[in-house]
Length: 298
View 1: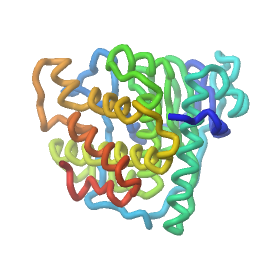
View 2: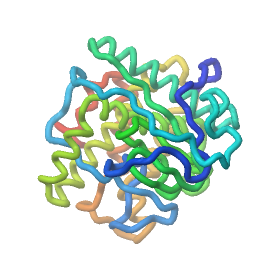
View 3: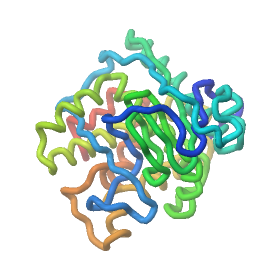
């Protein structure tokens, strides 16, 4: 995807190794599922909360942007530096920061069309581990979003794993990762995350997993909406790269790889076919209202 003319976001932080703000008690929203409650070889974390019943339309309200305290441990030369300095450490960071800025611009326009105010997210780079507004996390969880501090967190070493372990190559595969986490940011701003927490207490484990799948598939669809709204930047092969990534991280595919069998009631993110379908729905429509996974998961 052609993003080289887009300035990187200024809402970027370098947490170093294990740095960042304190906090806890809020769930992390990750890209990858657990396999039957145990870690996969790459070690990823499931979404730990469940979305509330019903679809919250674009007219929903959003929370204020928050940032966690502290700039990190100082183990990185750019810890505590400006967003631009943090983003320009290497090409992987710069690309992620450009995607962040592009998604912010895209969703800000969508929110304006709906008469709502948008609040940007912050991208947090770390190595090994980080303290977040949702508590401590390590690189083993993969990329994730923390609703408590409106932050996307990533150890960019994951991009190497995405290519080498999951076979998802290309810039759009990486862009999809960031856009998916920004999809969780949109759900947070719309109030879906609050509904998630409330429904978690009422749901059985199986129903909770099904609701989690709907939330994750909507984040995939929102990632597609972003790409569709920037269709003039899509290059040959991009869509295929995104679909390859979505296919590689389906619950059924990962469970087959990890244990040779699948347990549908344990799915938390959706099958490979579902993830590809909802990414495609967003890509083809460019319309957030078409991402109503709560009414229909196919």
